[in-house]
Length: 220
Image 1 (tube, rainbow, N blue to C red):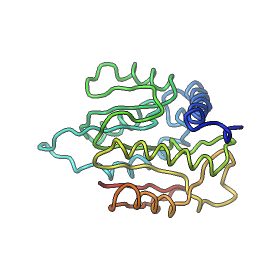
Image 2 (cartoon, rainbow, N blue to C red; image 1 turned 45 degrees about the horizontal axis):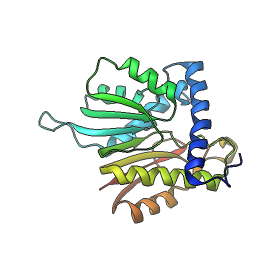
Image 3 (cartoon, one colour; image 1 turned 30 degrees about the vertical axis):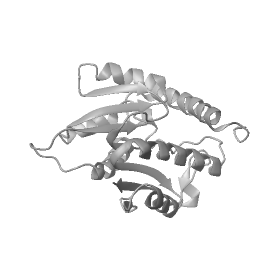
Image 4 (tube, rainbow, N blue to C red; image 1 turned 135 degrees about the horizontal axis):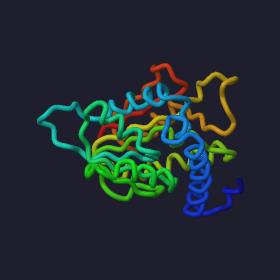
């Protein structure tokens, strides 16, 4: 992939194309399932979602509904997870894969508390943003270049998110024999430090839930 010589906007567009192509294929192969969003199975997907929920306020009948962006929403699985926990939110799912957005829009068409748009960036204010698995697939892209892309996406998310951000990444502490060349394995210490210095003072690193990844919670 010859993306090093491209300007940032063009590079982001090029990245969006190959990511979209990949997830279009997974959805076509496996449908609205965990594997359709490139997760191993439902348990793996649910485990990640449970960590992301920790950024959200405790729910009660007196709590007002908040706004939530699901960045890289896929087919809307996190929205169904919110329903499972009876968490009320004005939900916006964004994804660069058109077929994912179209599928989600049809599936949830009867609801007035959610909407889906095809985009590679956040462009409106929100209380909370969650990102699950969106940054894992880098194809043949250079590790450093992909990390720059991830940081650019997080900077965009931080700019528009008012209360809290939660995201996960595969960990560089994974067993070497289980690591795959097409996936991005991040240094958790680097991302903790970056969020602490650039986003908020209250940052939590979760690396103890039995997966080859970590979750970062940024509370503003």
